[in-house]
Image 1 (cartoon, rainbow, N blue to C red):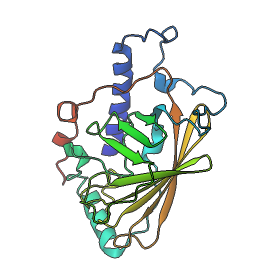
Image 2 (image 1 turned 90 degrees about the vertical axis):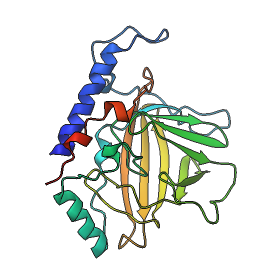
Image 3 (image 1 turned 180 degrees about the vertical axis):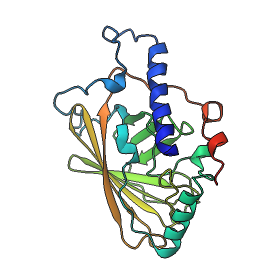
Length: 247
């Protein structure tokens, strides 16, 4: 319930923030509706000059940010998950303005900046974090330092961008209820833009220390052509920490 109330608060904040933003010079006549209430644009998938789908733009994850399904946990991980849930997520790293990790996201928009050799994913929420998907043919570091967001390399498989991420620390939670992982977490994301208004991401998580088998789930984002990500300072805006008191 706390998680749902927090989400409702954040979404309400979006509406308030939207009402305070000046209209962009190139934007159409302002609407009384929040951009989160407007349907995504329709049309064909845009392409880059090299013929690949253009994933660029600002994307709204909607309620798909919370959809992960039932992850098959090993006994120790399942016990830790139950302990964190019973303690009402008191020690949630994101609730204390630490990075969310991968593939956890917030309901805030994300912006994709795409070039032929590098794709950058910018988060409005959490701690204004970012990810870099290197597409220049490099491999993962042989002995990567444990990272909050991992090390990501990517390549095209037809019209699908496949992102491979390893090198995590074990400090992040996979969701707001405390789903754990180990430093062996391996995340593979498959990004597809089937049309102008939608971005589909299939996510597979593997973790030989924490899971009994790989787990796959999907998210669908909608395109926000007249929106830009905004400054979000977690330490200033954070409303979670004072409520994360446990039992």
